Every structure is written in C-alpha cells, then in structure tokens.
Length: 224
Length: 187
Image 1 (spheres, chains in turn yellow, red):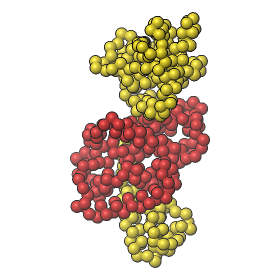
Image 2: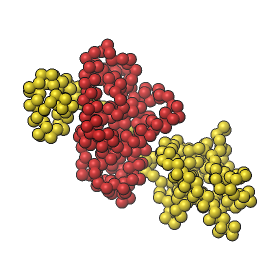
Image 3: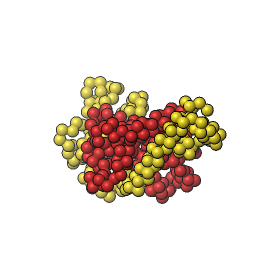
Image 4: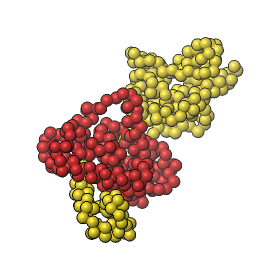
C-alpha cells in the first residue's frame, strides 16, 4: 500500500471501520512507514479526544420533543375532492402570511383581469401593519361572482382550516384560542411551509389553479 | 447503531400506530438533537430542525422501503437543517445570540471543563459544518463511512478524504494554542 492510499484510511482504522484485508494491508504499511505511523498515532489521539467529548455531550440534557407539536393533524377527509386537498396548500400559504388572527372566513377582491382572495378570522383583527395575504389569479373573473365565491368557498375552507388546526381538538375551543394556536403553529410551521412553496414553481401554479377550479365548481353548483 | 426495533417502529407508524411513533421519538430525540446542535451550533435551529425532521419522518413513514433507519433519519435532519439555514440566509437573519448563549457552557461549567475539551470544541467550531456533522455521526453515533456518506449525501471517497484532513487539522490546532483563533464559539 502506498502512503497516499494509506493515510486516508487511517481514520477508518482508528474508528474500526476497515474491511479485514484493507486493515491488514494498512497495518503492514504502518509497520514499515514511520511518517504514516506518526500520522496514525496523532489521528488516534484526536479520535480519542473526540470520543471523550461525544460521551460527555451524550450525558448532557437534550430538550424533550413535545409530541403534540410533532404529530400532524388528522388526515384530510377522503370525501374531499383532490382539488380541495391541493387548495389546502394554498390555505397553508395564508398561515405563513397572516397576522395574529387572520384565519377563518374569506375576503375576495377583484380587479380588472384578476381576482385576489384572502381569509380573515371573523371578529378578529389583523395585526397592525401586517399585509393581507393575497393570491392573484391569472384568469380573469367578473366582479359579479365575488360574493358567490365567498359564499360557496368559505365553508369549504373553513373545514380545511379546521382540519389544519386539528379539527377534533379545536372544535371545542373558542376562536381566540384557535387564533393563538394557529399563530403558534404558523411560527413553527413556517419553515416547512416555505419548503413546500419553494419546491417547484409549477406546483404553486397548480395549487393556484386548483383554488380557481374549486371556485368554478362551486359556482357551477350554484347555477352559474 | 440501528436495532431491528427501529424498522418495526417505522412500519407500525406507517400503519397508524401513534404509540410506535412516540417510542421512536423517545429513542431518537436525544441523538437527533445532539447531532443537529453539533452540526449547526445553534440550539434554536437544532430544536426547530429536529421537530421538522420528526414531522417529515412521520408523514413519510408509509414510503419507507427498507434500508437503514438511522441513515434515513439523519439524512432527513441534515436536509431540513440545510433548508432552515438557507431560509435564514435568504431572510438576512444574523446569528442568534440567545441561541449561542444557550448552547454555551455556563461560566462555572466552563471553568470546570477540561482544557483539552474546550480547545477541541473551539477547533471543531472552525471546521466546515458538514465535516462537524460527519465527525459526529462517525464517532458519536458509530456510523460507518458508507452510512455517514449516505446520510450527508456525499461520495464515501470524498468524505474519507475530508475526514482525514479534518482530523489532521484538529491535531495541528490542538498542538498550537496560539493559532486557536478567537474564543467566541461554541458547542
């Protein structure tokens, strides 16, 4: 074995992670090469120090995991259409963007060539200075559908958001408790949601389209 | 490091057994936190990354198709931590002083610490994050070179080279206290 092959295997030797044949070859080389032997001794000292440090760290306390914060919410009801499931991800967007208590209910605003949708918790105030969460749709939609969208989509998103906030637990709580819970959740979930959002632009576009489709389906059911 | 129970717990979790996941969490919460703390040097980041990691493990348990559970777990943690750091960087977030303080030994404890250990920690703090993570997995978790490389998504040959250089560098720094740099850092 050459020195250049030997030295990079020294850590594996010290950590007991070399196949028997390689170990034998390396040990033979170390017996014959003073420079590599010295390197092996020095690396051995560092590995020993690292082991002591790791053992000491392992004895130290580590904060326990709060399982209530880890176990996810109940799964979406199977009866909900796929598009609504996708739309739930849009609702997650709002959880990132909203202020202290902007969850339930829906605010729809239309402008020429676009529709913006946001949600607000009835009776709750958005934190001062916090911009309203908005989604913009590329497809044009008439101003006349605004109230219908609100009337038909609001219950669906209400259900979705109940699911997101842990439906079984949260149903019995009042809105302010839910709002606080959601805010806590929002803070903790922000990174995960941001991760989802940054996954692919296409995915986000699909989600936006899904919400628009949900709106369309709801309106068609209403005879539009 | 992996025991057969790990796979069984994941499989039971995938079948909807919350007790199995709780057992899994209790088994790994300490090692996971210490790994993330050592790699990121941030108690807040380590705790957040651990939580997100466990959520991801829970939600993806159904997709587990065998292989080393610890490798899967630590690879997930490493990815999550990288995403969090990236998000912090995008947000322009600076270092978290309260985090560093929380992760640092108390003055009293520091005074009691062995000088070698303190010097070692300072030298470790100056290594690249990935190298610190790799050393921890190899030494504290007892992972093989192949497992560690898989967890950190680097080729084993590359990792072997980096670990050799890191250990040599640690030795040099431990031998020359004057070159140990500012003593500002942490776990």
